[in-house]
Image (cartoon, rainbow, N blue to C red; front, side, top):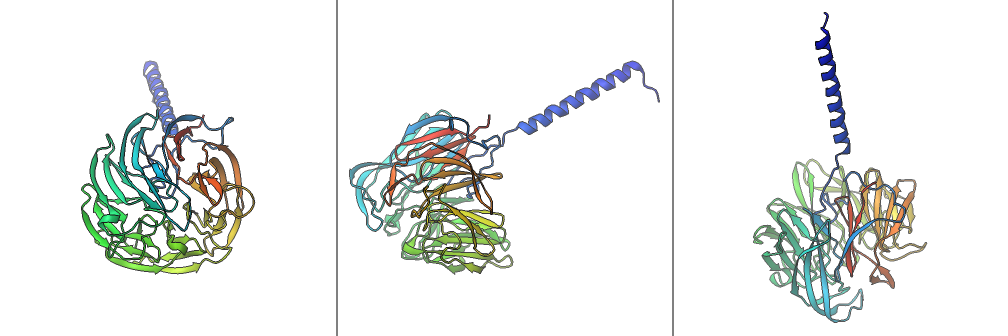
Length: 454
């Protein structure tokens, strides 16, 4: 079949235009930036992972670009970021002395509060503060990262002040005082478990008889159910396990790990595991059918998750110079290995998940040096095939973690360690990642650094 000249030219032009359009679409797809918020403790998936595209894989010459900083007061609580706003809580000490005695409480008088900033410019949008006396060990401000859910942000103070505020203007929607309402003294190191929202409910460790864990209506604060009893609530945020065809609410208190029905509070199973000093802190980390839970005192266990009925089976238990025992920061379960900061030795450790064997350990990204530093800390975030780490020394590190070695690709100092522990200066606050930026805080400032690749 023969095509006329004019018609042939038009067809060729159309083909070329379609080809160019396809190329433009492909380029647009290739250059589309994947963005996500950091709306609560330990990121959108609560595993520390960071999935935005177009971010740094190496430290630029001269270090990270500082976009903005704003003054804040005392606080261990990390920032949360969503909808173009950054939220961070703090404590302004007006009276009293902080001795940082791990075995005793200090009395302080001051104000606790939450502050909202524009994530791009750092402009303060609003503040909400209230008077609050502290009677805590290490009374350095709030511990729990704010939780953002749509148009609302939830604040939990170190003495149990739970408040729901509007993200737009900080107006209080509802508030509760957990220690007073549930007749329970704050744990010695304060209320630390960030409020956990799932569906219409907010789960929070409260305390008291039969109310170690409570479920509240997230919009009204009205209690839906309460469950469990114990001498202390511990410090571990609740989390959700999906297994055996249903959702299970995980609650790790100082004596045992429990699974409850999220809607009713019905107890599904219990696994006894008790770290020293009632320091149940880090939620279990999960990979496929395996769950790892650990704490101070060489207390740790790898559990097999039953997929036929709610329950777990012990695969192995930790022992000295074995596994990793987490406290300040959450380990990352990466394939068949675990990477995390060991609270006893203070080093970063690689662990084989099948049996708990340590593959390597290093102090380089935690407290530095080459010897034991109790609770040496680095906060880990997996970013594709590399890791971002924020060290207690105030350094930001890019590294590659494999079963064979710790490979540091670069580091830069971004924040002063303004707190103190065991005679050394530390910053023990989870970072946040959003908008191709890094958000970090100490006891003097919250700062934003660019992570955008050139």
